[in-house]
Length: 135
Image 1 (cartoon, one colour):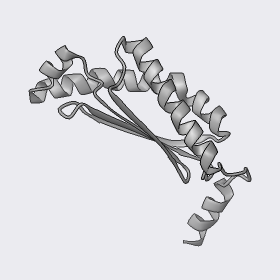
Image 2 (image 1 turned 180 degrees about the horizontal axis):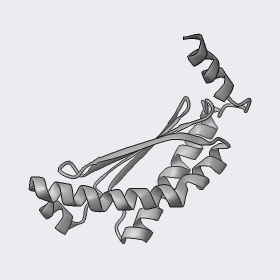
Image 3 (image 1 turned 180 degrees about the vertical axis):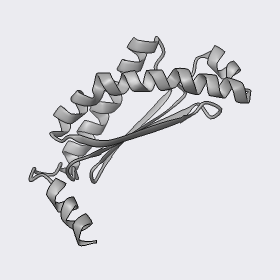
């Protein structure tokens, strides 16, 4: 247990934490950035985006990202698998295109990234864990 505790302290950078005002400003900036990114890449924005910066994490979730044909396809199990596969490609491209943006804005390095989507609920989420506490 001591090793895990020490590694947590070792990964913690000595950087100032975000103030409440800075956190809210960045959350809004990231929300706008993500909406513009998806509109540019896919030709359709997300209906709802929520961005949360909490401790050492950035959580981005969205709803209403599927096109009308994708919603139709997602009505079956095979269709959901197909949509998940195609949108996983979009998620990987998002990660590739935006990781440096988030790291530079937060002055921290992403050490873990995970995402998921539920095509039948038209919902997706991306969680990034950074190498320091942000808030």
